[in-house]
Length: 304
Image (cartoon, rainbow, N blue to C red; front, top):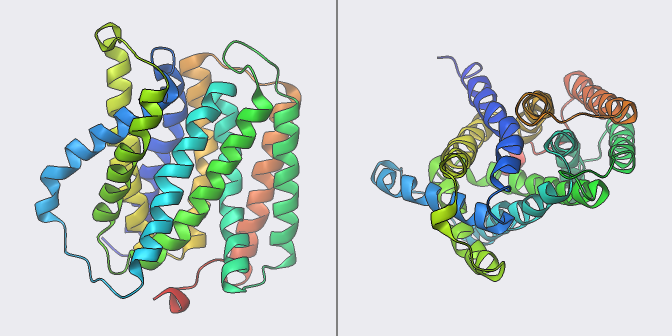
């Protein structure tokens, strides 16, 4: 398979898994507190990863890598899943999925701040417009049983996207010397340890009463949306610039909207639909800008 085609398959698989994760996570929350769901999914991913460790290529460690690894692990899973874990307790899976559309733009801005690469005017406009769309999406959300505080929930999801952008930049640098599966396994292992006390602090749960479908959801989240999806995305980062890989996340909101509608019966107001159009439109502007000139993200010659 040609190198130009292979990363597209990686990204398509990751987006499909991540897009469906919002509705599945929301469903799991009906039986378990958020931090328990995150903890169990991390633990399940680690259990599946450990037997694979013997086939993972040994990393080529360079002085200072521990700093990049620390940043990557703090961003994902700690900050990312911490924010997103609570976000879906306050907003709908559809709204949370749409907020993820700003992640590629955050990557471009982060590269500008970290690497001093000034983005073009279109990218700057796209960032401002997309943030405005997120604000409209949040403020126009109606309180309901599944979304008691959409403003807070969407802001937490936005925080998760900031963490995801930080992870993208650091993993891009590390992925040339570290096996993508190893990086993903390390993230899941750190998450299993980090979220254990947070889950236990949420209070006791009766595991015997947890429905089978909830355990199935956790397995899907841990193995599919966690270990498999991040391995696919990290593999794509080895072959593509960070900005191009991040732009694939634009398709996740579409998957999230469809699964939220089909699986959970979630609906969106006219203002929210308009906000979705604004967010997606701003992302398209940034994508066209990326085709016209070099992307304002992490160039390979700087990272490698």
